[in-house]
Image (tube, rainbow, N blue to C red; front, side):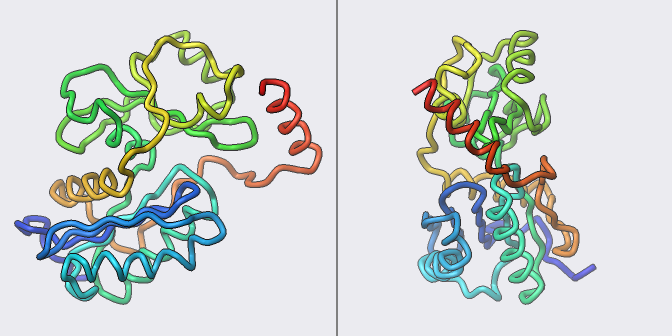
Length: 250
């Protein structure tokens, strides 16, 4: 185990990166405050990530060697994006001799939602399009500033399975892009929905700071993306069927 800095650092110097979706989110905090960036993700994630990292570190007045820890979005999310964030975070951490903070990408939606300051309120269900007609979902209860406890752990659901879960315990709050993506196929629920992230890098940094203060730093060798499915691509027939289903509801 490397001699990592203590989580008691009064003003932690952190870098946070996430590429689980169609865009890359990067944030940092240092002597000059906080800085955030968003850049194109997907196929461009690997080429856009490091320039965004350099930009936020420069803005907050940090050299990479001064970082206390690096946080990354561990998933669930897009297979390639998760690998990109984890590999970049690990590579930087090994080179710099600092620990990592693995963050839950569904909790990120909850932290970005209008209910992030509502202590004691009902759980926020988060549902994100997982492609292939499936959904990444979980239910999160706020138990402290930027701290979310998973009442329902992140899982991969079919629409039918998610409808059954909602029927058993109807959600009071819902965040995520899945309702908009699935349209009329989405299980009916009266819950208010937060369908689009407003400040993903800011929420990412808040989760990173809270995880650091809780002492959740890990050795870079222990970092792994959270993959919830083994199959990562559709066959030609499956892609055609999915397009037909989307067109039928549009």
